[in-house]
Image (cartoon, rainbow, N blue to C red; front, side):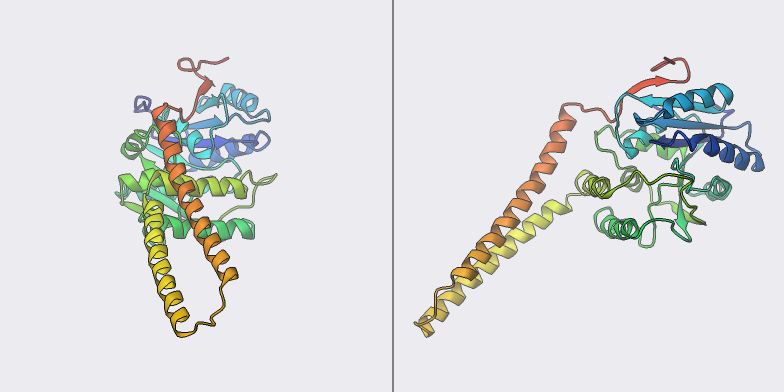
Length: 322
């Protein structure tokens, strides 16, 4: 359950943390400086969620929390993934407005003020749109593919970039965290709740140091979450493929019969037969795998696989300070 609203906290910032121990002090400093300019230095909390980070991120979070009263740290017992770590943070926010941002300082904290103004203008959610993306070419290509898939599967408004740097109203967060499945996809949950969405432009910063933790495998896993957790389109596609192949097979049978009748010398097509068999077998295997993915996720949901497990926090209560 989401933590009780604290009237003294107007803004909650949730940051999933993984392999970012050396970046966290600068992140805290820049975030605090940006909110001082907005006059919110006494009205915000910064929730840092260590996603079982293998470096000393949790120790750094504990040290920062003891130094700054606005920092709340959460340490997960095992790696849950970025979106599940975000869900862990969302379950503990106390503010009226919530900001989600990454831990690498590619998201400028100075943009938070404009995002807050967008929500105060009446929107439920405010996404950011990068003016100059500081990502590698393959990640940009993956994002373009992800954008097209989201438009198709999630009925995402065209032109809306699903950035991980975004702002939400508390009432939207309350609806989002009702999802208790093991494979959370935050943007899909947001689009399920509201279409009152706006965007603000930001200048994408170069990563403060190190390399991105996202790789092709994790991007593929994210696409699977989107496809199998929030849409039945892949199953419908498998059905359409089945009908299409059945029709194609019928046409091929008619073609072979007619060709053999008109041209008795027509040579037997061993190579083409093998090609067709392999093609149909490949499509069948793909469709079975697709169905298996859905069944596997349903199985894990029925067995109550948890989104995340909180090991400790920097405040007394659930998972108290260790």
